[in-house]
Image 1 (spheres, one colour):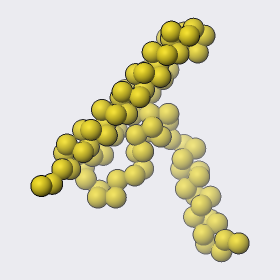
Image 2: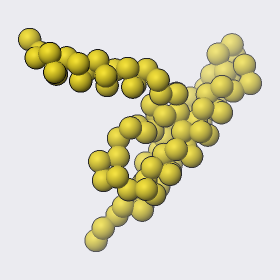
Image 3: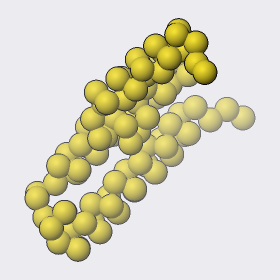
Length: 92
């Protein structure tokens, strides 16, 4: 059984997750253990792009091709965000 403090922390974290947009969740906006400003900026910008793509033009959920293109774009954008973060945080 969780202690009251742990349960409260878990509830607070769940509440924060519910407030995040699709793009923010996809890039893990709340996860930046190093506190790197460049990482944060990349995640914020990519989250905004993902939100635009996810909102789409209304056909993504009603047409197979639109759905496939949406999934492809989201996957590629998340990969690009991860690669960008890796590139700026890479240390020899």
